[in-house]
Length: 119
Figure 1: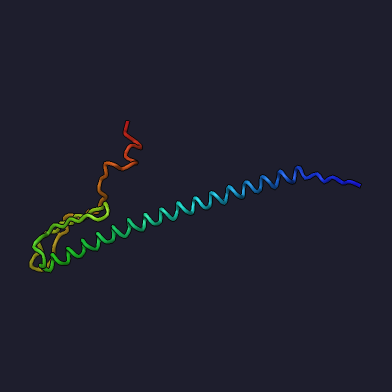
Figure 2: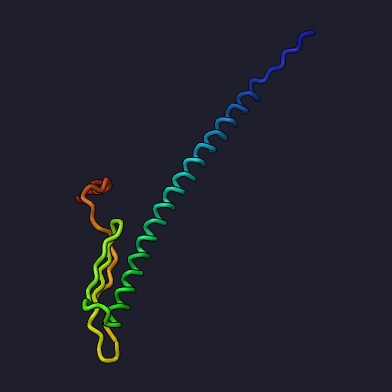
């Protein structure tokens, strides 16, 4: 006796399930890789900005303690800059902070500069 088993609907269902699982696995790997890359970039930017902030604080400390004759500070690091300007300390050692600005330097070769050119 010959019995033929027909697996047509089951085979199609299993093929669809395998394709869906494979697609989800590829998307998961791609997303996790992109997340890791962005986390590394964010960590680098944060470290640079914190270093600039620390250098600005150090400048103010030295300027107020009369260790420097300057009351303006500018530094560039990894494409970012900080500008700090304070007044000369008065007799009580008080000073006024005129400017504290951390900014990203403009890059003319930035690939995203042409995303929107205005209307």
